[in-house]
Amino acid sequence: MLDHSVYPDVCPAPDELSTLADRADYVHRICSAFDFGVFPERADWERFASWQDVFDTFPLPHSPAYHTFRARYGWPAVPRGTSGLMPGWRAQDLREGRIDPCESTV
Image (cartoon, rainbow, N blue to C red; front, side, top):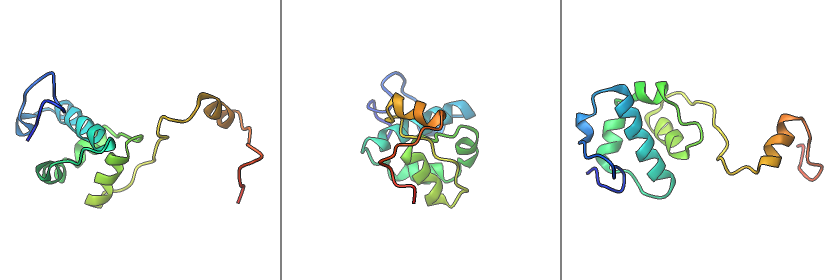
């Protein structure tokens, strides 16, 4: 199940992750892989169904996978972050209230 592409530095079994922080690290790794096209194992979908405390305590607002898990389980949505791919100049414009005249205001 848990292979070295997700956990190259350690070799725990997912069911041995006892602390909230360890489970949060596992969620982060699975979501990161999912964000890049590695679909989670069925066991992860089943495991995460009982881990709402992890998802609530350690949100990943920039991860589409994180939001997919929350939606799949019917948990309340959390605010989405940007993808992280926004150019620095665009973020600065938004912070300073500058509006691109080419964007639709509708």
